Length: 258
Ligand code: MF3
Ligand code: CO
Figure 1 (tube, rainbow, N blue to C red):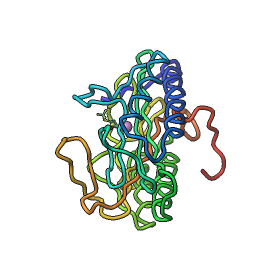
Figure 2 (figure 1 turned 120 degrees about the vertical axis):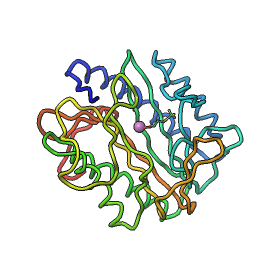
Figure 3 (figure 1 turned 135 degrees about the horizontal axis):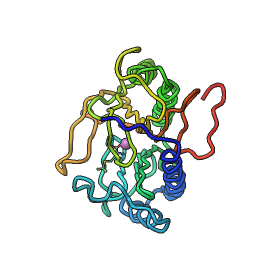
Figure 4 (figure 1 turned 60 degrees about the horizontal axis):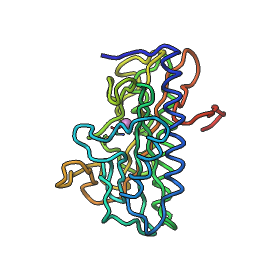
């Protein structure tokens, strides 16, 4: 069932989104060679709780941390660990979610640890561009397939793979609501988009094969060919007219080409 949000409810999600943005900015600054992913997780939980919010990932279906830290060939759901020390040249996706006053926000970014290869840099950039291509389609009257098609086309035109096993999602009082937001699809197909839909759009893009394996911890997804993978996510709201509001990018205004 899809729950449409009224302006008051979107206002609550905007507050949750703004807080999550602050948390993720602080985490970006904390990513350095020598830091463990467990330290990033502890820091995230402290920042969230200090601001009277709840880490939504912690204990979600048994997930043991407040962030997902997915390094190099890890796609998503990497469990932070004391033993995982960030190394110069790696890329890390940090995914985090929180609940503020009953409303959810979910966002992720990928960045380099110190200096990274040109290829890794390009993958991160293409993934962010995939998000922007997709989110521009999140307007009233379009369909879900328009978002997926835009993401997929941009990735594949650049020789990258779209992870198929995981999707974006509706979000609101729950972290995962209907509909599933595929990162591939056909234009003009799928659910019609409506004002008040709130979605997490999250392309997961690999430099090689799109197929994945899951680690023995039953959480961490990796590319099957162990190629690098990047992930970028924002929580957005579909507005009455024009382009959507990016709830996890406070103050963002659309320009001609984004
Ligand atoms: N951001 C992830 C998603 O969009 C949530 C992580 S799943 C959890 O699905 F189990 F780690 F919470
Ligand atoms: Co999500």
